[in-house]
Length: 183
Image (cartoon, rainbow, N blue to C red; front, side):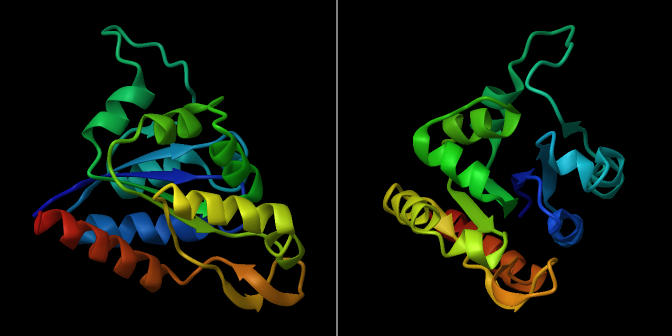
């Protein structure tokens, strides 16, 4: 069965791994629409995601469109699953505070489907009590969090904050979609 997955990408060095996630989801026969924050576009070009997904990439909340269609609402209404890979501390803080100031946060706020968030950040940021509290609040609100791994970070340090493996992310997405299938 084919599903429509909306995959958000935020501004982290781990954004390149989201390309592999999209590729894996496409190979399974899913349709993937990617939404990129402006900072994500500094790490990976939208053309990469468009080529891999064979679908448009949403990069702005305000898109010229002949037939008016507020993307963030229509994408949220038609998605079987919304996944954010990687999710920065900034993105997590915005969502938990109800801030919807770009295409991705607006889509998350309008989501009717399950939302999976895979954080990736420096270990010092990840263990910050504010970030930890925000993650707990998101979990209580029904968001599914894919815990980051311990490993080498972009700073060269080793700590917890490294994006979960692509395989683990895809397995959790598959698990969530199987729940949908059995409903």
